[in-house]
Length: 284
Ligand SMILES: [Zn+2]
Image (cartoon, rainbow, N blue to C red; front, side, top):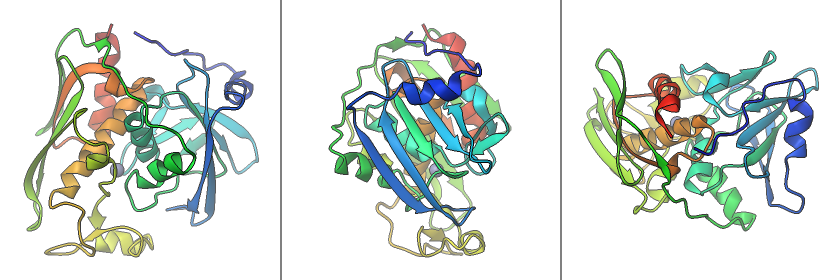
């Protein structure tokens, strides 16, 4: 497979910025951070082939720390995917990871001056809009990486299975005890528009969003419905697919290159990352 460099040595701090393509694309996204409440500035740069996605995070000491977007750098998956290196953390990476995968990008250096990526409306739209505004064309991804065997991860009644196939696809079964959701099933394949999943927004309860001061920006669950009109009736399950694609990008290459069908039953970030770790030895 197209393995990326596994280097984690001290020179990474210098090397990530040196992997930016001279004259390549770059685009800026600025937005208020979800937890830090500060304006967060990010710049996404085109990087040389083989770089993968590397975050360059300026921490509170003003140091720029390289954090490669790979599963071994994941330090938390409770609410969102948090990466960490050398004592510096970066939260909410998954929606940018998904946007990059859907847009056919896999070599990026992303500079951030805070501890989290902008949330936008809770989907990947903020990133897709930035790519479009910067004139970055969507690139076709060809499935070329074979999955050598069926890989399954389970936890309680949750499971994700990856099955060898001739192209990439993801399916998700959701079963939420909420009158407007319940059991939902959705599949995305490369024949579908990326926006069918990429602009699906995250969901949380109104109470939770009010605590975070987010209720104006994102869509929230009330006791029997939603605070804003949905893009689709099954938007919550589509967002789960967005998260799965973003988490699969922690393999270190664009997951749409995998000749595999993914079936997630009530999966989430923790199980997604477990799957990535188990997939790595099963691809060739
Ligand atoms: Zn999400």
